[in-house]
Length: 214
Image (tube, rainbow, N blue to C red; front, top):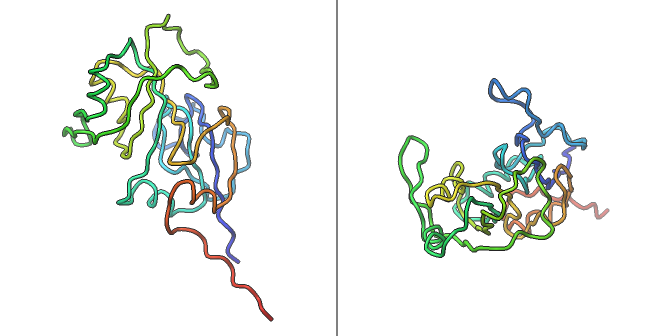
């Protein structure tokens, strides 16, 4: 009998790897998804990744098709991030980020990022504090950036290019699936219909069992 797939949202804490099993030497001491206080079913995996310094919305599922549908499809899907950068950013630097900047990608080549949404915001009142976050004494800016692509460390490289190094990076939503008030380390399970609807995904759902009309 085929079991129904399951879908989860977590608020990945700072310093945690987006995986259940270590892939490289030297990572064994770092916390992984298995350290969360939740009994995930066999076959659960992360959909995409957040590096260990990044925080926020991470999706997990037992459905192997979701990563391809969300991150490898021809239809772009929006991801929104709260980004704390060093020093006060100016309007011209913000416009550079919006229009696209060159970043180095795999193989050492340079790639110009596609136009994106970027705006200066106040630090959200409901944002969870990060343990050990240094005090910047007001010498920083908070940005809200929405991308429809995801090159390796893309946002960090983008803000570094405009000379505002990233101090904190929090993914708050993927399409209409938002982090909301999920605390760091918390796990929320959602149903398949809501998951696919809010992510604006087509295909990949498990077929409903046939009804018996006898």
